[in-house]
Length: 276
Length: 297
Image 1 (spheres, rainbow over the protein chains, first blue to last red):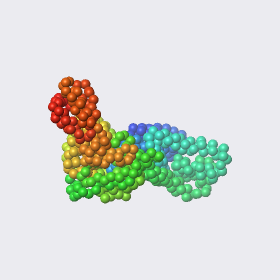
Image 2: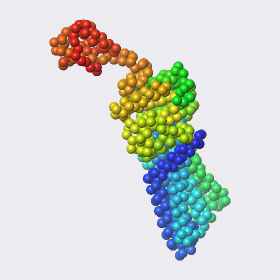
Image 3: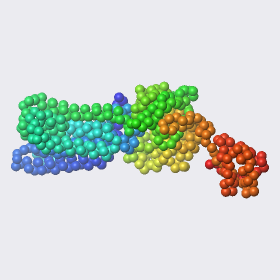
Image 4: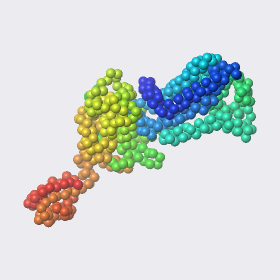
């Protein structure tokens, strides 16, 4: 692995991302909505007695669950399939660059771009909270940022896998949007409906929740915010009682697995498929 | 010229392809193809669309899995893929650059991937391909001809000993094609080994030392361009223009020599074997028939 090549590709990917209107739109939407959320949270904080960062964090979890996976999945899906369709992929791989270097460079570049977008969104929101004179537990806010970045990269990795397997960018984005719907749907309504219809016991319900990275993120974020999972119902209480102190590393480990595993499969799919 | 080009021996095999087969599903794009290219030689892959030319080019660059063996300057393309590509400058058929980058940014990006040392002077290459007035333009603003020159500039960045060009003039108009061929001839004279695909015969005769004719992915003819017509058994049609009174005697003379001849407006049309055009003119001259003009079809 030639890391100079990887670095060159990372720089190019970062540059491309900040010229990608979809990326800019997502980043602007996320920043705008989180600023609005902070404004309303902090404005109403007086009557509820909740500090700015904690209250904003609670509100942000739902916003992140919708927007961040959408950003990661669609950007990942567009990356390889888009270049494959334009013909730039075949030209890049005709240079002294291995497919591993290309994939890693593109992946890290996009991951950094997503991280930058989230840091900007969280940063501006944090400044607004401080400016409004309503501080609170900044650590919780920072942890949510870190979890959001891992979720963004995990969904990017899933989008990347779609992109490695599909020829046309439009097909890849379509599949990514479908996957996003499934993940969001199974996050709440689907899971509740399935539990009712199939009469899942609490252990199965938790297992179903843990195979969805969005649910893993949500459980981890709520656990950090509340220090217990009562708000998530029986499955949450069961998880907390069963795993106790190991629940947090387990959740973070699962999120990291969602980063690594789809990317590794994507590299194999890409090698098998070739550049066409 | 770099060390690799300087030490090259004209008898060396720069490219060796053995039993190359490439299938896409049930479709066989290249079928048991074997050939070699000597160092400094220019070899054309010629054939109709779908003959397998582009697939051969992509296999040489190891862009997808294939059956058979390809060695480039002694290196197995599959095992030493990156080293092999370092020795190759590639000009693709479809000019696929990132349109929002400038010419300068594009050159720098590819120069870094090709390990061109920092402080490299791009000026000589830009002058060579006559792109020096376009460095600050966005690639998306360039014409097809200029993009082709940019692709050639990128291919030449690390002074590779081998150039692989896939339909290099396909998107060019006649003038741009002529200019590009002049550039390629200069590079050939400088000792570059070239393999290029084309379906333009005039391009092949202007540049190639040898032609590999592909049909349905198989090698049909491997010959120098001047022997191509003969090997393919082609006939050339000559149109001879002459005064009306001598048309009949001319037809008698030529049909007496066994040549298929017919009247054609203000002259005659005769089909001749490759390399026999002068024979027709000589026969008419000996019979005292004056030919005013002629054209070749």
